[in-house]
Amino acid sequence: MTFQILHTDTNSPARLGRLDLPHGQVETPVFMPVGTQAAIKGVEMPTMAQLGFSLILSNTYHLYLRPGPDLIRRSGGLHGFTGWKGNFLTDSGGFQVFSLSPLRKILPEGVRFRSHIDGSSHTLTPESVVDIQVAFNSDIQMVLDVCTAPGISEKKALEAVYTTSAWAKRALLAWKQKGEAGYKGSLFGIIQGNFFENLRQRSAQELIDLDFPGYAIGGLSVGEEFPVFQHFLHYTAGLLPINKPRYLMGIGTPEYILEAVENGIDMFDCVFPTRVARNGLFFTRNGRLVIKNERYKEDLRPIEADGPIASHSRAYLRHLFKSEEMLGPMLATQHNLFFLYRMMQEIRQAIAENRFREYKKGFLACYQQGILE
Image 1 (cartoon, rainbow, N blue to C red):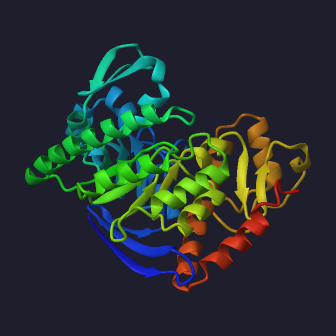
Image 2: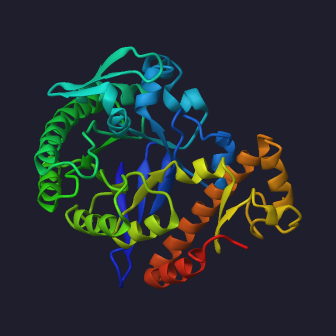
């Protein structure tokens, strides 16, 4: 992987860049759609390419449990298994293990947990997580980390930072050994520290000293208030190296994406845009549109005048959802993904023209009107 900063906005830390990955170039800032099970729900891989995406995210935890890394390896990695010709970023499974806290135990050697599928017992270590992602042939893989919830004590947060740093060192060694054997994917470290500035600073410094190819900010957008998110995003982003890609994990709404870009973040992902699409919520420039509302029963206008579903009326889309036709969620998912892809194009253009903050202000002035009438 190589990362090049092409331009930084003269009025903010927002920056335009390019990642060169094993399966093609990726322009940054970039939003990565989430295909947890190696699939974007309701959208075929060729359609994802037609929408313009070149990097998607899949989940190590879920794919480890089913269908398993050996089958994926024998299929030619995730690319051969799925037919996706672009790049894959795979997360480590740390967040999923965090969300299954009643079923897991953090140990010095790794994390022991019970499968949410069948209750079977498993142990993931920093080294085994690297091995699994190498079997996937991930273009970017993430280290195993310890994610923590808001409201825990500083002592507990410090323990998580200590474990995350120790695991990161072990993962980096395992990744370098795989690289010597021919693996071409990159490994990103993950900054933790909960909502304590001193721990964020410690976590960042310990991982920077290890010199990872890229860095992710973890433990944000996990339920905290937006002003708290803003503060710790700004603080943590300021600790990261300028010349390495910066990834903020788990954000996917326009407000959060724009805030991240303004703080010099290059990459982000989230299930939110596709999850809400399956429930009939559409992103539009003038706010979120809930298609099941009665007001759209005879509305013959499109959701928006352009995009992949512009030929379909709101009335038809509402009919699909009310009739529980699977085409409704499929079309909504395509629309929301295209909306974010186009937004990222506009963001990159605004950065190139040194008007990012002007773009952010204008976009939010329209988008935050609320529900489209």
